[in-house]
Length: 114
Length: 112
Image 1 (cartoon, rainbow over the protein chains, first blue to last red):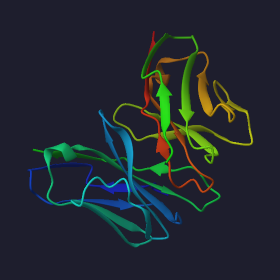
Image 2 (image 1 turned 120 degrees about the horizontal axis):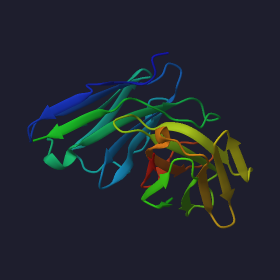
Image 3 (image 1 turned 180 degrees about the horizontal axis):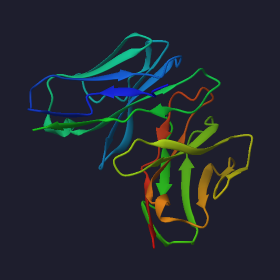
Image 4 (image 1 turned 30 degrees about the vertical axis):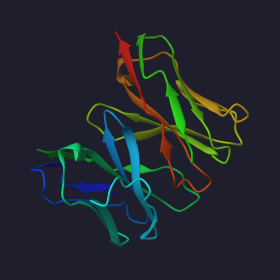
């Protein structure tokens, strides 16, 4: 298995633009997590899905952030409009069934908003 | 909700010495405690974990201890090597391993 796949790996955009981050979880995994990592705030859980259903989105910072999981093999995190303070590394992670605890992280997307 | 604290935030040790990182958690319902290692520019990766029915677990040079009564757990690395230099995150989660709460991280530097 190729592991969790994220795209793009790097994104540079201007303030006000829409940004879409993409994630493909490990095949067979039924939980998917979106994290944001910054020096100031560390690793923050934004939202997670179980069987494609959003379970907890309390970590989503603002209405500018939205996430979807239309099927078991694809998820998006969208920021509209983007702001400089959104600059961070965004990780997607996936996990198997409830008996399995380990989360497998993707390589991350480094987002820079100018 | 769960709150995880981690100390120290930075740690420097000489190669060959031991390193200890400590975490505390607040939710007594948490029963799974993983440790992730993140090398510079890389993704976090699980290095060891412990469940609430176990007090200690060891894997070669790495060990984790858990004190459920005091709600704290620790990572011990013996005979440190330069490749151990990284940021280490502890986390706590519930029985379903869904809502991970990570500590703020410890930057470990192993000096040659």
